[in-house]
Length: 136
Image (cartoon, rainbow, N blue to C red):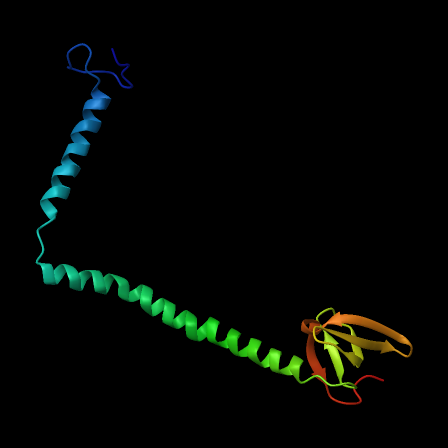
């Protein structure tokens, strides 16, 4: 026998009023859910699925123009700046180090941060080329 969670009023022995209430409640919801659905025409079904995808497509388009495109443009400008580095340029690095480019390699540069002190860095660490005479 199942345990009853409430006091049975006029139910025969072994019938739980709580489980009977839950069963009746769900059967009402299920029958109303089946009654609300109606068969749709093939054209209407295709149109509704396209209209359902429209917000997703619009959101992707907005994200492309707001986030992806500007980030690609910024990366392209950064690559052009790194490729245009020459000996003697004054630069700022991602770590905040300021210095003058003393040697250039394919993927590394030597940065003179003080007279006689040189540091080797990756080219991608350079974030800004400063105007001449900025570092004193």
